[in-house]
Image (cartoon, rainbow, N blue to C red; front, side):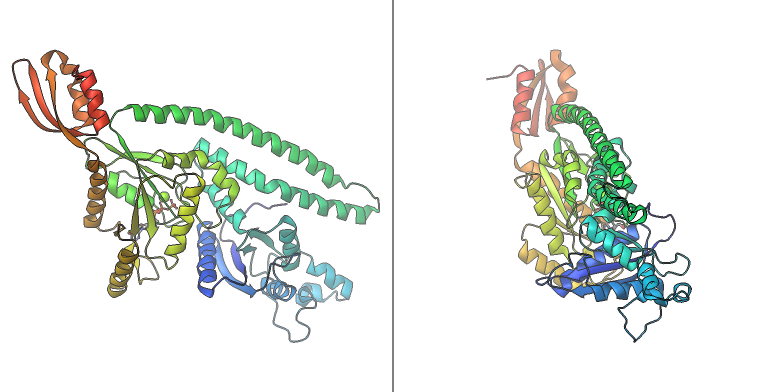
Length: 480
Ligand SMILES: Nc1nc2c(ncn2[C@@H]2O[C@H](COP(=O)(O)OP(=O)(O)OP(=O)(O)O)[C@@H](O)[C@H]2O)c(=O)[nH]1
Ligand SMILES: [Mg+2]
């Protein structure tokens, strides 16, 4: 049923229903985001259709008038004043030649001619049911992808590690399964119409088999992921065993600049792209310039409004990194007019994975892009000052910055260090010459402020976490 998305520039039309209670701005932000999602998939957005309705049309999401308007657009048909909603497909030259009401009906249900049509796919800004998608597809004459499908497709394309691929495949299969049933129903009814026989269509039997296969495949993937989780947990445990290592996790809405900050803070070369969901895998690097004790930073998958539920479930193990953090850096794109919504969505996902208790620093990034539609920096300085003042007033503890300004990155670096310094204490430790093999460990797990050599060994004045210092005292044989 679902066709593979074609290579090359696919022309997309964005369609949204504006429900009561959704403001024009909210709708605009959401539609713009869908356009960004489309661009990330390499689509060219050629049109936008918005309809105010009390609720979604049960049969096909949009009302009949809008559906026909879209059909005319897709088919590249001239606007006709006479009965615009009657049989728009009939205005196509090839089909008009045949004429007749029956033919018109049939034509209206056919896929628009790929050679002359103006759009290849309709993107719907909500998750719609399989039958709504199917009906809309038939009426507008081209493929329909809902928001969930678009997000799944991006995840599918961006997943590179074994774990991410398995997680995305589960979510896709779960999405696909009920849609297969819908396709089978359609195939079944067509079969009955054609052959005149009653009972089950051949498609339905096939689909039953397919769905069984899907269930088996999901089970297989879940086992694979469970095995990988065991491995991941061992790795994490090993990291935690290395005493005194503090963990910071970058979280936030997709495209907020998490990977850019990761690069700036660690000097690593993780992928940065002006795309949604560029990062799907967690990467871990050391804060640079190095601190003692070391601080590890992780970059994670971004969040989005209406993140498909299966994806949240699938990525739970990845997101669990956030749960084990000593500190979360919640990154928000301050240059986005919808930044408050971004913030709320991230908070909601963090709550869903029970990470709301982890201490966090709110980082408003991209302040340089405020007042600049293109988002390439050099925005309007007055607008930036105004936004910054508003953010500081509303979120007194926040950091307002641009990842593109080294001085700002240095400030963030200092804020991270300060967070970990808060709980640190200073102490004197004595390491006898006979236990010098422990010297390396001492230097790795706490900051050595002073070292004095004496006859029996060396005295150190150190700063570190109380539990780490306690551990060192035990090792050095100095438990009181
Ligand atoms: N103007 C401006 N652009 C920035 C800033 N920080 C990041 N960007 C740009 O924003 C885009 C997204 O950055 P990423 O770091 O990939 O964002 P991300 O949060 O990792 O996104 P996902 O991995 O998709 O969740 C890139 O084009 C960056 O160059 C900033 O402070 N100012
Ligand atoms: Mg990223």
